[in-house]
Length: 177
Image (cartoon, rainbow, N blue to C red):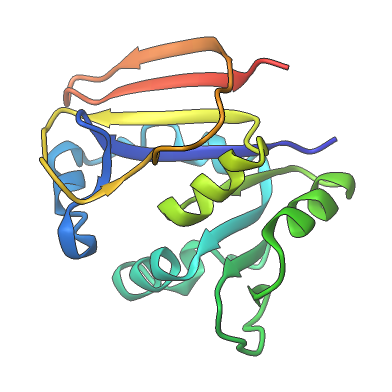
């Protein structure tokens, strides 16, 4: 069965964005030639689940090919129906039904790239199997929290921790079942 993996960065105090969806703190650890394992990670996935606000931000900042490279399906979780664009599907249905269907299909793993609403809905239903969380060495004080109150307790198994010379620390856990 396929698994859903979270690969995301947060500030040391647990925020994935500052107020107004400001991601500028991520630039603190940008280093030419360093992708923090992202290329290796994405080589193991063929499906992306992402919230519409995160999708719009990335498309505006990087471009649509960041997600839809012609080799994977992209499900943008949204409340507004839109026609598909290439392999990008704007999904308005039940997220847990989508995940159950995707996990039962053949293929590589599934990547959840946010945002916080999507991540926390998946956590609420215990649907994330693998967590790769990069901690950025900054306290941002407020914004969008990665983990919201009210998710059920979920024991995790430690896999690895890597420290990088930029100060970023990457933690890898899998869901203990």
